[in-house]
Image 1 (cartoon, rainbow, N blue to C red):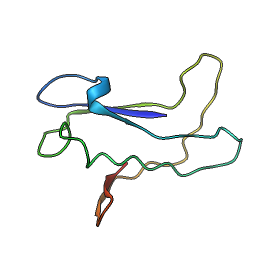
Image 2 (cartoon, helix red, strand yellow):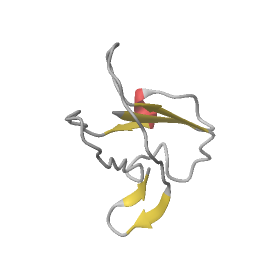
Image 3 (cartoon, one colour):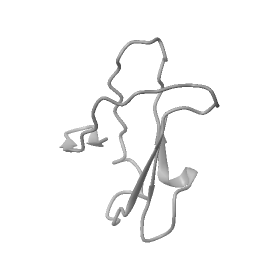
Image 4 (cartoon, rainbow, N blue to C red):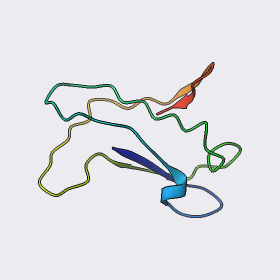
Length: 79
């Protein structure tokens, strides 16, 4: 599961992304993307987000909610 973004330096790319593991066990899970560690995020104007929940065709994925929050001490911004 991967979150991509674009900023003033360019469009979505591996360099402007973070990944988290998703077990796909059929139960609801909360995924947190720590983007604060990326120099391609900090101090940049983010103008596009792209969420890639699965990597293969034929897989399904449901999103119940999305929240952006202020940085958590020690963890940074989470999506």
